[in-house]
Each structure stands twice: as C-alpha cells, then as structure tokens.
Length: 209
Ligand code: GRF
Image (cartoon, rainbow, N blue to C red):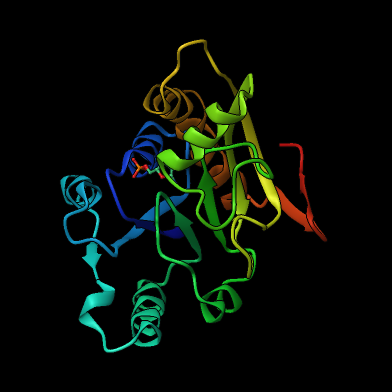
C-alpha cells in the first residue's frame, strides 16, 4: 500500500479525480493519507473531508518567514508518512529542501504540453490565455516529476487536447481538465505506485505492465 499526500490550493477537481480513481479501482494499493492546502478556503479541503481524508491547511501568512512555512509544510508531509507527493493545482513553490527529501517522488500536473506555456508566471488561466494568444491548434496537459526548477522535471505523461475556434480561456481550461488532467494524473499515480516509472536522466521510461 503506497501512501500519497495531495497538495492543493483551489477547487480540487484533480484531487477529486484521484479520489474517484481510488474508489473505482483505477488506482490500486494506494491510500491518500493527507490533503494539504496553503488556502484554508480551498474547496479541495471540503472534498477531502467528504471523502474522509485527513485535511490540513497551513498558510504562509501564519509564519514569520517563507522558510518557516516551508519547514511546516515539509514536516506535515513527513508526518503523514507519504511516499509520493502529488501537486494537484498547488500554487506554492516547492522548496529545494522538499525536492531533496523526495527525489522523483513529487509529481505535478501542468495544464499545457510542456515545454510550451510553462515556467514562472504560467499557472491557471494564464496558461490558456497564452496558448490562445499564440494560436496553437493543440494544447493539453503534462504530468512531470518536480525538480529544482519550475515545470522542468522529467515528463511522465502528456495528453493532447484540440483547441476549437472561438474557445475562451475558460472553455479551453475545462476541456483540458476533462479530457486530459483528470485522466493522466490518476494514470501516472497508478504507474508510479506499481513501479513502472523509471528515469534515465531527463527521460522517463514506462515499463510494460
Ligand atoms: C488545474 O487546471 C491544474 O492543471 C492547475 O491548476 C488547476 C487546478 O485545478 N495546476 P483543481 O484545483 O485541481 O480543480
């Protein structure tokens, strides 16, 4: 049984996709041992509570420094005994000490086909605004390991989604969530839990089942 901690900041639809996948048996041998948010008002926390999952919110505002907040976040994850940390719409920067504590054991879902429209400043609707402004015909989502950079870690899974004429950023965001994010994040967790994801430098190798 692998314990996973899910870090959230907002609505929690990706968290819900993970909860549902565990319930439906699409993710096996896995327990969500903690949902942690930096935003006490995140609806994701309500989703966790409804699912009977331990939920915790800690805000940077409650700490004298970002470093102390980072220490509290790392301690909360350590105490949960999580072996995999999933960033599901988590908007805080993961500090180097946490990346070092969980080498290739922190994954993130990003709402574009990395390396497009990613890195500092590309989050939430901004990603889709940039994709529409560039006029791409295809966008999508990426699950990647978290390293010391922003959206720069080894790519685990990606899924392309068509951009339609007349799309608003919200239209594209929802389509990418429905058709890509909510599918590849649970799929990536299942692959990792069952030891099928290896890295060779920047590349990820997914072993046959
Ligand atoms: C999603 O679009 C995700 O790709 C991005 O933030 C959004 C969070 O959505 N990282 P939710 O909180 O999972 O609903």
